[in-house]
Amino acid sequence: MASPNRQLVEFEVVPNSEAENKRIVDLRLPAGVLVLLVARDGEDLVPNGGTVLRRGDVIRLLADSAFAAHGNEMFSK
Image 1 (spheres, rainbow, N blue to C red):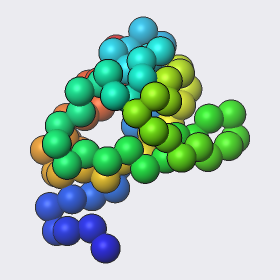
Image 2: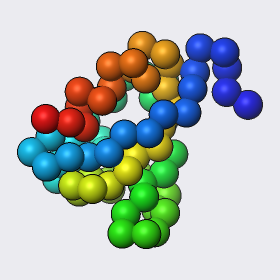
Image 3: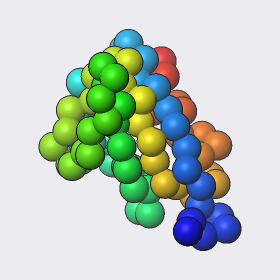
Image 4: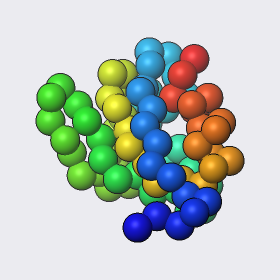
């Protein structure tokens, strides 16, 4: 179970975003943010640091409330 200040969040990688065509490890996510799943083309992928994010990917994360509120900036334009 997630702690009270952590939540499951979901973001979509949009074209020309900071995250598009980057490996997860290169995103420099804050400590405590865990990428749980990448949904791509109807399949769910269990990612690792070398997983390259593509436009249209839906990323599911476990994150603190601060990142949950502002993390979309990384995945949108």
